Image (cartoon, rainbow, N blue to C red; front, side, top):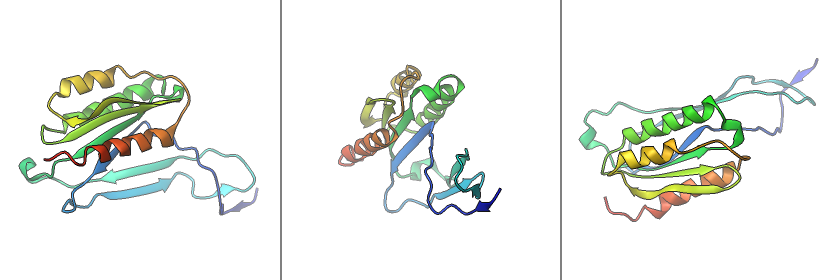
Length: 164
């Protein structure tokens, strides 16, 4: 079997949970790293490979010095997320909510065949309500990834005029 580097390829990427963040100009850097499980694939064959997307942050010295965040939590709730996957996505989203405080703005967007805003961009004053909305998410339908991430970005932009 001949191996050669692929010049163009289609990748099916499945995200369990994605977070879209608008950061202030003075925010510290976040390291973004993407790696493939198989950098070389046979030409002219369909193969499955995995993409790892890693975000590495930094340690906060004092939480009071943290810049308020504007976060959209975007969850894939398509049928492929059924079972443990949707549970892990919900857990990750709730962990993210628990890290926010009343200075922050958050929204929750889900997508499958359609896109829904479960929690519109709002200050995080009631974490319990946001976690309840996340717990109600179930898997069903097909995947409209672009529409979901686009709506998450819209939510972040819609709340950028809220004064902190």
